[in-house]
Length: 451
Image 1 (cartoon, rainbow, N blue to C red):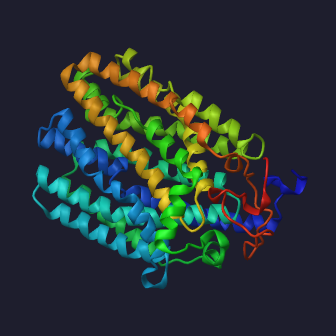
Image 2: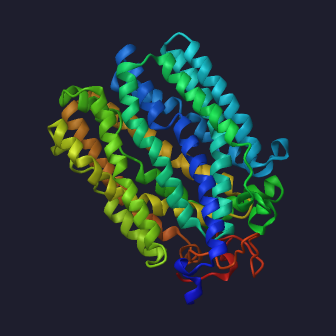
Image 3: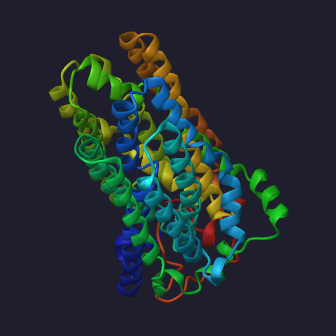
């Protein structure tokens, strides 16, 4: 590695271009995370509508969360649509414009509907389907720019740091909305945020979009050839399995929600406050990950982050006070942060050529489905025996996360060895010096090796 290739030694013009890229993805990520049906603002508010207004049990709440997540099973189809469909001739911006507008209409219609289990299922299912297209455009574009500019790690840091802002705020506001606001007002807020994303999609900064779709990493092939190429790529399997196992946490979502309010006798807002503080703990470690990128190999960051993140929820069965629970929240989040950011970095660097939307959606879907399927298991254990069921769910959570470690062995060496840095980029256009496939196709970008 030459001195000029270090992140801190980037030319000033290139550094300015990189910051313009970051300044585009930061507000975009914020808006997408805010309006997502999986986001804490929508999720906490809606599940408390079920629990407190419709008197649903823990199992019913977890089943609702799983049902409205089922559109994620179509992530590969939606990802292929992102990679091959060019609506309005705007590529990713066209996807965001159309589907953010439809999401806004869905949330507004949900606010006008009579509150019932059926109406919540129908409305949130529809919102999830539409937001899948938005997420495919957002994450596919982020991965494409990350690959072309050798900034998979830095964009993973921006993506995760900014996405946790609405998660933290949503955790706090979701509990407050559940206590103080009507369901109609909650859905109108989500509809207004969706309209803001629709307007944002009109922006086309040159630093992001100039020639982005002309580069080798953006070139897709014929549909069925791309499907075969995707399935044959060894690089895709770890980015799909890791988020599923890392998020497989029975005991941590719906059971914890009921545990806090029923066993610890705390107000609903404490559940939101816990997750707000939990995700606050992620942010400093995300920033640390960004600082470590040019100093520590990606291999070390991935292995160590997963090992530390495994036991982070093990303390929960031993906490019997809301105050102690809130005090432990931020340190628990900090333990999981490096591992999760490394998983997101891995997904970006593993995308096959022209199939960024497909792999990114598959990885994101795996994470959410792991979260939701395990939640149904945890809720069932809790309903059968609230005390011991909650503890058993936490034990399973720790074991599942530690199973991530052997999965790392599936990551190809050339993907592990891609070094963060952008020496192949110019201030105007990324021009790879060597003809190039992405790492997900089995070759290093721009012959970059060994960070």
